[in-house]
Amino acid sequence: MPLKTECPARIVRLQEKLQQQGLDGALFIYPIDIYYFTATRQTSTLWVPAQGEPMLLARKSFARAKEEACVADIRPFPRSKEFAPLFDGQRKIGLTFDVMPVQQYNYYAKLLPEREFVDISQLNRELRSVKSDWELERLRHAGVQLCRVFASMADYLRPGLREVDLAAEFEARLRRVGGEGYVRLRAFNQELFMGLAVSGASASGGGFFDGAVTGRGMSAASPHGASAALIAEGQPILLDYTGIFEGYIVDMTRMFVCGQLNEKLQNAFEVACRIQATIVAELKPGAIASELFALAAQLAGEAGLGDFFMGPPGENAKFVGHGVGLELDELPVLAQGFDVPLLGGQTIAVEPKFVFPELGAVGIENTYVVTESGGEKITVLSDALISV
Image 1: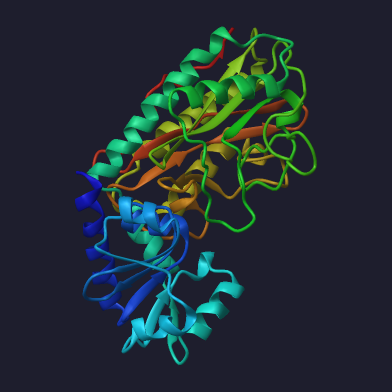
Image 2: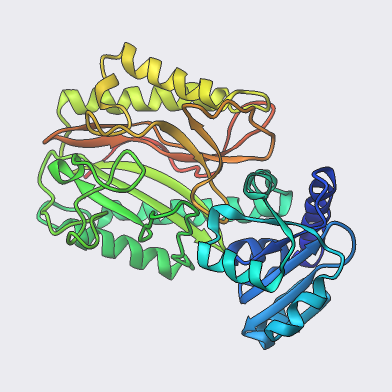
């Protein structure tokens, strides 16, 4: 389905939700939300009334917004005194507080005095979590391309490479097949450069990133991902990368080793694969997200690996899967406290991993679609450990 019909359908679904909540409309300023509803990422403000046609107020580039956007009413962003009259009669307005800085809130509150602003962050994220057939086509394509790059890396890997050399080669190959590189995250204070290539002890420390494996990075200013550490014989090498095509993100991890892993790491990798298989079988509409995390944690504990599950001891991440789409951290999250049922068409990266101090990290990750028969794998490369 082309975007010319995809975006209007999204707006209709949004308007139904706005009407249910008694809102007059929603105002969006966050670029990827605007892209989702209009098909342009140009710097703009989008007004979607609860009934009627949306209006896009473009700052830069107005010309490109006119060229790309799937809405009819596109105007240059007006002067301050001309702004409020555009919203006469609109009293109760939805905003996405999760991505709106206080400065921007104050700015729009000044432009639109005597309005009631209501947080629609959850409404918006839930709406975007269920993917259309058109979106699933984009995600499957991204999965195929990312798998091509993972499958090609064995011919490059060898002992003595720096982690950053391996990362640079992976990233170059991904760019050559069309990877866009924009890893968009909604969460405050999170950032990521494409993915990470880590090995041995440098993969086993904690870090700021909300994930199981962080890596040392190149400095304290960029403390995530590959470092200058040398890859050695017998070390676990973990490649965890995103593939972004037409804005849509898939996420996957594969394990490599130069030679052979020791028995402890090999066992943990096999446990991670079993946990993945168990969770994937339950990725059906109605399954409760928090219960799937609890199941994964239970299986890790029964294997004697609970202290190392999803991070180094004491710094364990409290999830085992996360939604993906136009952002890396979409809903749903297979996590503690996320007591909501899965919906058909949601796309989830499932990533059971174990992190052992001084030894390194092992695990697996694939992106799946929630279906009536369980998770449909869209990163279809074999999960097997790759030894070179």
